[in-house]
Length: 322
Picture 1 (cartoon, one colour):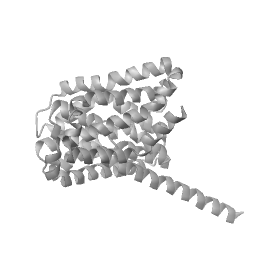
Picture 2 (spheres, one colour):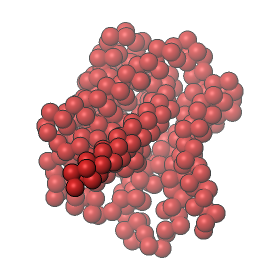
Picture 3 (tube, helix red, strand yellow):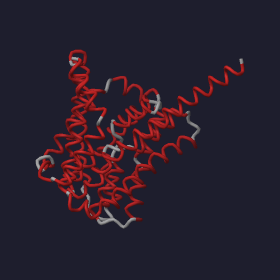
Picture 4 (cartoon, helix red, strand yellow):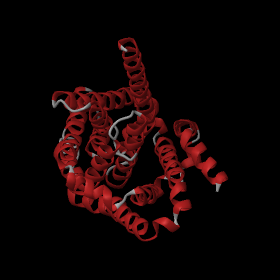
């Protein structure tokens, strides 16, 4: 058991390393990941099943008990990030495939990585989990509609076909995971503990597959797309925090809102891009997968240290006062 836990921790701790390594191998040796692209939907289904296995009925009760901030976060998720993505696509005059890819990232719900980053940033984890849960269940409706509305400027989008895809690769696996966890959770603790590592491996493979399939296009457009992805992520993080600040939310909630809005389910964007558009449309999502696993820990570390320094400052002042 200890060996399994150490292995899972090792894989999770070096998530960004594996992701970068896979991207580099995919770029220079595309054949190494050629088998991955047809399996993207299955891999994402595994990730979503793992998410379902971490959910409990109490997560949904929390949404009903405290709907105000959760609805706010989900609303911001599906307005700020899609509009920022659309603006960037227009300003940078992206070709159709890449424009659709950037918009797909923006219209997807938040990913489970945001919950981990919120925890590390000493934010409101319950709020983060609730927003992720609600936005994920809203995604089958809102992601296709928003993509059709915003990306329709560049390319025809079938909202109905995307709805069916999201139900198959997101909702069904999550619901199955939730049911199994509710019925047999106590008996499957060892399996549940290994799921984060399985998700990491699946995401790493997806990144390698997308980069490998688009190595030539990335060589010519990579710098511009990387800049756009960074701007999208950073503007999302700032917008979320600014919104929370304007609404006078407590610091922990502002952090949760910022991270939840800024970090997207890029795996879903990859899957939808490959299934409904082209491998090239998946490039922004693949780069987003790499980048937000760099920016997320950086932001989380900054806020964590800021909290510690504030506590230390407060304790020193209290000692002086006494």
